[in-house]
Image (cartoon, rainbow, N blue to C red; front, side, top):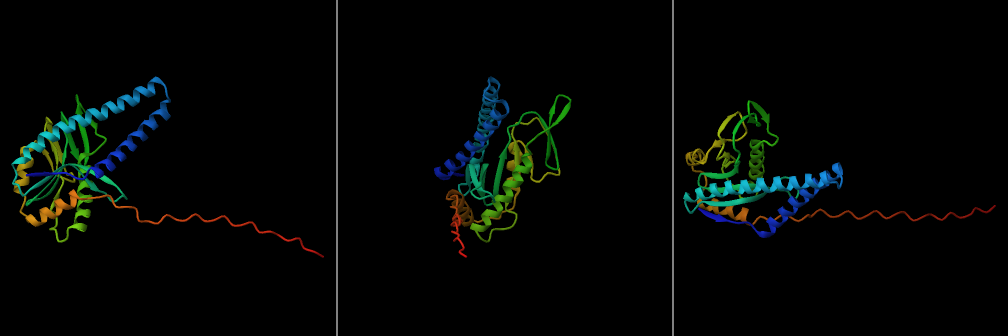
Length: 245
């Protein structure tokens, strides 16, 4: 399988959005806690948690990425692919975007440990003898990715077959999963995912694979073509003439 990359400019634009989001969170923290020691500690803990989650995710994604090298050279993979959303200049990130004869796979890798249950995209984590709600739903997130990518790709690569975009969620190291009636498929372990991918029907030609890969690799954020409205000039004061008798 070939591994391709997107432009550094696109990655830089996405990083700017991430930095702006972090700055907004820090601002909220300082507005709530001020510039006290507690406020500084809260900001530090936020950054530490972000770095820890990113490291764990990167390690898990690297391991999964290595496994997919067994696919044919006609297949293409993007790691941490950026795809457009329906918001202007919006981007969302996919852990692994794989394009092959079996279809387009937007993989969401969750290196979560422990036991989890999900029903109707609402997730819970087992903590001791209790089940605690998970704030972010990985299946809802993947369903959103699937919708955004499908809308975009059919607009740039015509005549693609219906239902060729898959967005599975993979838990490589979870102890137990109980999933029912969720928007996308969920797999416990990479072997189950590989089996499902191989079982998908052939639906894309090599020419379509290349066209889709080229569209992803060369994607650029569109410029804002909406004309900036000109400011309305203030009305000039009307000079009143003194009336004469």
